[in-house]
Length: 75
Image (cartoon, rainbow, N blue to C red; front, side, top):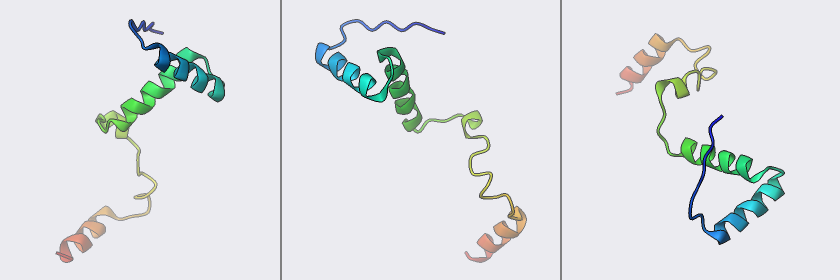
């Protein structure tokens, strides 16, 4: 696992981070990892691998060709 060192981190922000970590039952390092992961996921940039399987249940029982034909006919 990698190590991340942050220099010149604002004291006030660190205190808020410590309080949130305590409230969430995590270490400061774990809280930082969770927050960064959430921020990166929300960035909206995904690879095809990240999206694999998403929505699979929605299309499980759908005949895609029939669905496409219906969509095209609606134009």
